[in-house]
Image 1 (cartoon, one colour):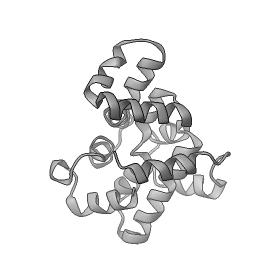
Image 2 (cartoon, one colour):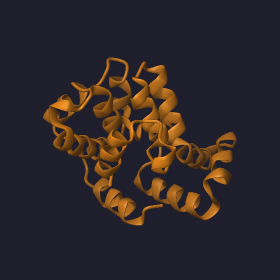
Image 3 (cartoon, helix red, strand yellow):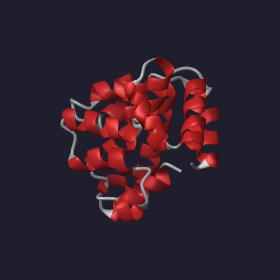
Length: 170
Protein backbone atom coordinates (compact mmCIF):
# COMPACT_ATOMS: atom_id res chain seq x y z
CA UNK A 1 0.00 0.00 0.00
CA UNK A 2 1.44 3.35 -1.04
CA UNK A 3 0.51 5.52 1.93
CA UNK A 4 1.30 8.87 0.29
CA UNK A 5 -0.77 8.00 -2.80
CA UNK A 6 -3.72 7.05 -0.59
CA UNK A 7 -3.42 10.17 1.56
CA UNK A 8 -3.48 12.41 -1.54
CA UNK A 9 -6.44 10.49 -2.95
CA UNK A 10 -8.31 10.83 0.37
CA UNK A 11 -7.94 14.61 0.56
CA UNK A 12 -8.70 14.97 -3.14
CA UNK A 13 -11.90 12.99 -2.67
CA UNK A 14 -13.27 15.41 -0.09
CA UNK A 15 -13.90 18.13 -2.67
CA UNK A 16 -17.57 18.08 -3.69
CA UNK A 17 -19.00 18.22 -7.16
CA UNK A 18 -18.17 16.81 -10.56
CA UNK A 19 -15.22 17.75 -12.73
CA UNK A 20 -15.75 20.65 -15.14
CA UNK A 21 -17.96 19.87 -18.12
CA UNK A 22 -15.11 20.49 -20.57
CA UNK A 23 -12.99 17.87 -18.78
CA UNK A 24 -15.84 15.36 -18.89
CA UNK A 25 -16.27 15.95 -22.63
CA UNK A 26 -12.50 15.64 -23.17
CA UNK A 27 -12.51 12.31 -21.34
CA UNK A 28 -15.47 10.92 -23.26
CA UNK A 29 -13.78 11.83 -26.54
CA UNK A 30 -11.10 9.25 -25.64
CA UNK A 31 -13.55 6.46 -24.85
CA UNK A 32 -15.39 3.88 -26.90
CA UNK A 33 -19.18 3.95 -26.91
CA UNK A 34 -19.27 0.92 -24.58
CA UNK A 35 -16.82 2.54 -22.15
CA UNK A 36 -18.77 5.78 -21.71
CA UNK A 37 -21.43 4.30 -19.39
CA UNK A 38 -18.68 2.85 -17.18
CA UNK A 39 -17.01 6.26 -17.04
CA UNK A 40 -20.26 8.02 -16.24
CA UNK A 41 -20.95 5.58 -13.38
CA UNK A 42 -17.66 6.43 -11.68
CA UNK A 43 -17.78 8.65 -8.61
CA UNK A 44 -16.83 12.31 -8.95
CA UNK A 45 -13.61 11.83 -6.93
CA UNK A 46 -12.65 8.86 -9.14
CA UNK A 47 -13.34 10.90 -12.28
CA UNK A 48 -11.19 13.79 -11.00
CA UNK A 49 -8.35 11.37 -10.21
CA UNK A 50 -8.69 9.64 -13.58
CA UNK A 51 -8.67 12.97 -15.39
CA UNK A 52 -5.44 13.96 -13.60
CA UNK A 53 -3.87 10.65 -14.63
CA UNK A 54 -5.04 11.00 -18.24
CA UNK A 55 -3.84 14.62 -18.47
CA UNK A 56 -0.40 13.53 -17.22
CA UNK A 57 -0.30 10.74 -19.81
CA UNK A 58 -1.32 13.27 -22.47
CA UNK A 59 1.48 15.61 -21.36
CA UNK A 60 4.07 12.85 -21.77
CA UNK A 61 2.79 11.14 -24.92
CA UNK A 62 0.89 13.97 -26.58
CA UNK A 63 -0.58 13.19 -29.98
CA UNK A 64 1.23 9.84 -30.00
CA UNK A 65 -0.90 8.55 -27.11
CA UNK A 66 -2.95 5.65 -28.46
CA UNK A 67 -6.65 5.84 -27.61
CA UNK A 68 -6.51 2.58 -25.58
CA UNK A 69 -3.78 4.09 -23.38
CA UNK A 70 -5.87 7.18 -22.72
CA UNK A 71 -8.86 4.93 -21.95
CA UNK A 72 -6.64 2.93 -19.59
CA UNK A 73 -5.69 6.13 -17.78
CA UNK A 74 -9.32 7.17 -17.49
CA UNK A 75 -10.77 3.77 -16.56
CA UNK A 76 -8.07 1.99 -14.53
CA UNK A 77 -10.14 2.33 -11.32
CA UNK A 78 -13.55 1.58 -12.87
CA UNK A 79 -13.90 -1.63 -10.84
CA UNK A 80 -14.36 0.46 -7.70
CA UNK A 81 -17.91 1.15 -8.90
CA UNK A 82 -18.96 -2.37 -7.88
CA UNK A 83 -18.13 -1.84 -4.21
CA UNK A 84 -20.36 1.24 -3.94
CA UNK A 85 -18.19 2.67 -1.16
CA UNK A 86 -17.82 6.37 -0.51
CA UNK A 87 -14.69 8.03 0.80
CA UNK A 88 -14.84 6.90 4.43
CA UNK A 89 -15.93 3.39 3.44
CA UNK A 90 -12.90 3.20 1.17
CA UNK A 91 -10.67 4.25 4.05
CA UNK A 92 -12.10 1.41 6.14
CA UNK A 93 -11.75 -1.00 3.21
CA UNK A 94 -8.16 0.00 2.50
CA UNK A 95 -7.15 -0.39 6.13
CA UNK A 96 -9.00 -3.71 6.38
CA UNK A 97 -7.27 -5.04 3.27
CA UNK A 98 -3.92 -3.91 4.65
CA UNK A 99 -4.55 -5.55 8.03
CA UNK A 100 -6.29 -8.76 6.98
CA UNK A 101 -4.65 -9.29 3.61
CA UNK A 102 -6.13 -8.99 0.15
CA UNK A 103 -6.71 -12.73 -0.28
CA UNK A 104 -8.68 -12.96 2.98
CA UNK A 105 -10.76 -9.88 2.25
CA UNK A 106 -11.42 -10.91 -1.36
CA UNK A 107 -13.14 -14.05 -0.06
CA UNK A 108 -15.71 -11.76 1.59
CA UNK A 109 -17.33 -11.18 -1.81
CA UNK A 110 -19.35 -14.30 -0.95
CA UNK A 111 -20.86 -12.63 2.15
CA UNK A 112 -23.40 -9.82 2.57
CA UNK A 113 -23.52 -6.16 3.47
CA UNK A 114 -20.44 -4.10 4.24
CA UNK A 115 -18.16 -7.15 4.33
CA UNK A 116 -19.15 -8.02 0.78
CA UNK A 117 -18.56 -4.45 -0.35
CA UNK A 118 -15.10 -4.46 1.23
CA UNK A 119 -14.41 -7.76 -0.53
CA UNK A 120 -15.52 -6.24 -3.84
CA UNK A 121 -13.25 -3.27 -3.22
CA UNK A 122 -10.32 -5.65 -2.74
CA UNK A 123 -11.18 -7.20 -6.11
CA UNK A 124 -11.70 -3.97 -8.03
CA UNK A 125 -8.85 -4.47 -10.54
CA UNK A 126 -10.29 -7.82 -11.64
CA UNK A 127 -13.87 -6.51 -11.63
CA UNK A 128 -12.88 -3.45 -13.65
CA UNK A 129 -11.02 -5.50 -16.23
CA UNK A 130 -14.02 -7.79 -16.61
CA UNK A 131 -16.38 -4.83 -17.06
CA UNK A 132 -14.07 -3.29 -19.64
CA UNK A 133 -13.82 -6.57 -21.56
CA UNK A 134 -17.61 -6.80 -21.64
CA UNK A 135 -17.76 -3.18 -22.85
CA UNK A 136 -15.55 -4.05 -25.83
CA UNK A 137 -12.44 -2.23 -24.62
CA UNK A 138 -9.08 -2.75 -26.25
CA UNK A 139 -7.00 -5.55 -24.63
CA UNK A 140 -4.46 -2.96 -23.44
CA UNK A 141 -7.15 -1.01 -21.57
CA UNK A 142 -8.48 -4.23 -20.03
CA UNK A 143 -5.00 -5.39 -19.03
CA UNK A 144 -4.04 -2.09 -17.40
CA UNK A 145 -7.18 -2.08 -15.24
CA UNK A 146 -6.19 -5.54 -14.02
CA UNK A 147 -2.43 -4.97 -13.69
CA UNK A 148 -2.03 -1.36 -12.55
CA UNK A 149 -1.06 -2.37 -9.00
CA UNK A 150 1.17 -5.25 -10.09
CA UNK A 151 4.96 -5.02 -10.25
CA UNK A 152 6.30 -4.08 -13.69
CA UNK A 153 7.72 -7.56 -14.28
CA UNK A 154 4.15 -8.92 -14.20
CA UNK A 155 2.68 -6.44 -16.71
CA UNK A 156 1.46 -7.68 -20.07
CA UNK A 157 1.11 -4.13 -21.40
CA UNK A 158 4.15 -2.72 -23.22
CA UNK A 159 6.53 -1.58 -20.49
CA UNK A 160 7.12 1.86 -21.97
CA UNK A 161 3.38 2.58 -21.86
CA UNK A 162 2.95 0.92 -18.46
CA UNK A 163 5.68 3.12 -17.03
CA UNK A 164 3.95 6.26 -18.32
CA UNK A 165 0.60 5.11 -16.91
CA UNK A 166 2.08 4.11 -13.55
CA UNK A 167 4.00 7.38 -13.19
CA UNK A 168 0.86 9.35 -14.05
CA UNK A 169 -1.05 7.48 -11.34
CA UNK A 170 1.45 8.41 -8.60
